[in-house]
Length: 109
Image (cartoon, rainbow, N blue to C red; front, side, top):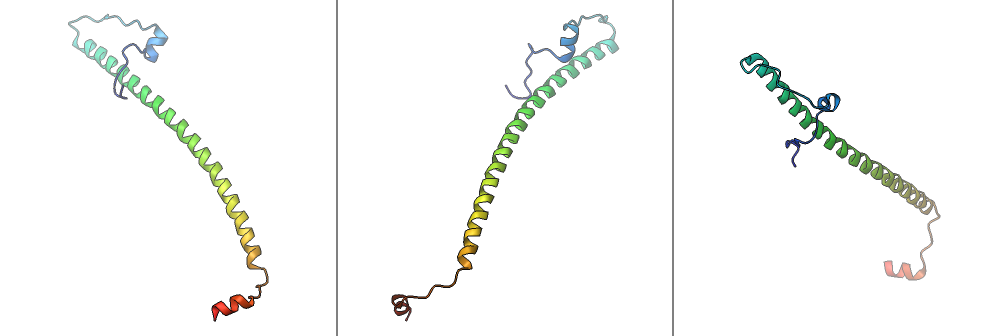
């Protein structure tokens, strides 16, 4: 079912509040009342469609929030690893330069 399909068995909030009773109290020859009734049904259907869209978007938000939390946790791990490796590098950089062995000096020459 796409987001624009309507589940005719699903009740609108108005139907849940009032028990869903909507009878044709308007006379057939009253065009203004008939128009009002048609507009009411159209608005109820549109509200139902938008409610379904809101529900779907809420699910997407939940999934997105979970993915964001996981990414943030992974970021913290990677930043800690980076900092740890950076500390190790600074220790290596501050060591006294080692003296080249006679074999290394010969290979350079």
